[in-house]
Length: 415
Image 1 (cartoon, rainbow, N blue to C red):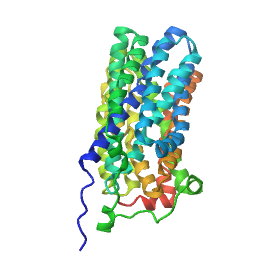
Image 2 (image 1 turned 90 degrees about the vertical axis):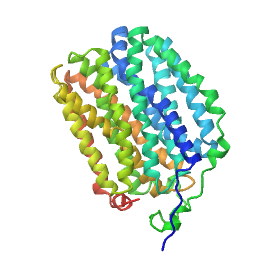
Image 3 (image 1 turned 60 degrees about the vertical axis):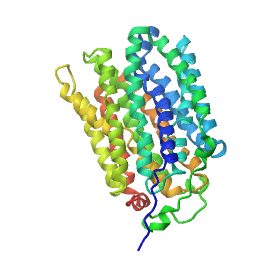
Image 4 (image 1 turned 120 degrees about the horizontal axis):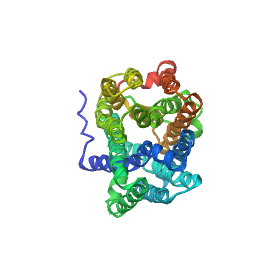
């Protein structure tokens, strides 16, 4: 008769989840507010949409390439110093953008600095931090902290657009930067010595019910030789292309179809309300059902969401926006706990931060290429139809590793 494992949700582990969530919100609201800057930057500087998209692409690719380095720094320095570094870059980047007048200045502020901040406060360190406290319930724990994307997206899109209309985009960038820097003292006084230790994962050995990776001292050199590593990297990369080709265009697309800027930002921001529901539901389903089945369901729902927004052509077709808000919101970011929990299961080791950082870099690179290609495709075609077709193609391809790679299917069995 097996012993009942103690709950992994303790006071300290819940505190870790809360910290990761708040840090995640701060880290996500900065890049997620960028769609609201597309029209103001085009109007003020007379830039093409592709040029504006390139600013976000610099940030996204910086975030992606910084992922492995952020994982390395987490393994070496711990969460406190890494999060503080991220807050400094986020605040500094926004303030710089508020005073910028040249493209290269935006590349440094909203591109390089914000990209570094997103990596330091993003899924890589949060996943590594959380994996120190959870094993059997790791999918749910990751879903909770990754749902910060929803809060960050809603705050970043909705609040920033309201403030932009009232104070102008420059005032908003500077104010957001100062607000984030003001959070630094609160961050630094937390009891990091207790929080950083984690707890031994003895629970799974008591029940005998959790399948774990055979003992192996994983290194990045060993990991990159496996199909699992590249399959999970591909999921992040190609899915990010599909998602952010829509995210970048969504607000402007609605404005071009006769919505006011505030209405457009509010409607896209509403997807953030459903993100926590989708994330936590996804995490729960991962503990009950095969990961591949859950993953394929999320891809199907996202494809439906893209089809919904594609149908919106005028203000009288709000049903299409409702469908998009629900389906896109429920699946936005859900691939993060799916891939994150699988990565932790396959590559659990003292080098997990670096390994997962390399895997997640596919998402940052995909965000960059998806955003840039979205703007470029629109510039050369003058049509959103090609953009939506590109997005749907990427989403179909993103689901294939869960079908085609045997090791991913095997480790995708119930946690």
